[in-house]
Length: 611
Image (cartoon, rainbow, N blue to C red):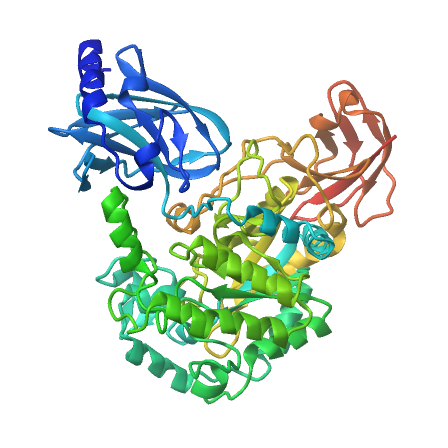
């Protein structure tokens, strides 16, 4: 590898930096590895080690998550190679900002720092460095700690902890993305969303943003939104058949349209559509009738109808001074409402959240979204308001600034086997490659693929919130419904290994895990993993361990992780069967004689009780 940094240059730059290091804003008091109120880490050149021609720093991190590396420099820009915790990447630096301290160049690739505490960064470049900054990624809203003790008292209350105990037991829920966009099916004026001339997500519920549809024009969709009156009962029954324990629906997505009767807005199901009903309340009552718990999704940060520019201009003005890129994703910059974002929160978002909590006394959770430019004080106000109205309602991470009761791993993302999160977590996923209804997306995940994601999540201790996208009539696409019911059939036999289970000391054996890294990854690459009789996933309940397979068994089943070193086995049982079969535990494996046992094409579960 070519060296871009000589020790002489390092010494020269370090000398110059001692005279010219000038920092603006809250970074002014930064020391060698200071992490300020916005969780920045500032690395001064004069404090670096020189290792093999590279500058190197050890630094402390207070909050884990995605970060970006910034270079503050003078003079000409060139190539730079950065390594953080052993992960190396190289980019040609560009002039992103000019601030008082110098030129700011931001690496486009983000860095996932998965633990607090000590980390190491090195850089190799010919650029005349003044300092490096490690800044939270735009999607990683971190708090100052000002409200932490108040939040913690609420989070640790007996009501919240009882609600979280239910959530950890439930494991499996239905997500529903449904709204005005469902009528369009991912097509606007004959053009599919993938062919939109504008950048943006190609998922159907982002129709208004990705086509930059004016607010008044998009609102015309409400005049024809008239779902079948049986939609609530049908969806609740489907969730029950699928073995799900809770349902979460988009009460208001980013487009700003409310599926419930809101007193503070006319842009809702009752006032703006021919349906003249409260779809949220109807589904709530249908779910309770089926024995399901109920939650709502609410986009508090983004509202393309009434939320102005999503606070973009204000955040950008501040960030430009500090040399931070302001990502416009999800912000209405094509036709923003004339009010301020703060006025939108006061006159709509806070009021609608209060309406939802009061309307549904048995509401279980609120799933916030679009928190990017919501301030720490605003995020805390949402959390505290919900607690004051009903302390039994749990709140997800995306309320912002660390105030959620639980984490989400990301859209169609599953944590790696070695990753341990500091709160209970959930993965939300799709049954095809879009959340809202997309009429031409027929890339349905098979029953076995859905089971794989679910079992992998359960083995790691998380919940799975699996999405459906009903059409404008409220009807669920047949392949989606069929696969969900087949998952339910599997759970009817094997659910004991899932509901209420925890991580075991071994998560899986066999082939390496197939990481699910996002909606776009699955859409582009598909799913090609093949399962074999050597693949097992494990869950546990006390002294009981469950070994889960996704294929039919052969005559002999060998489970290596349950060998004699795992402990002494008292009993072995096939879930869903009273059939006895010979088994033996030796130094290599637990061996089961299955030559007279029939198992399903989607696999089987063995229950093992240790003494």
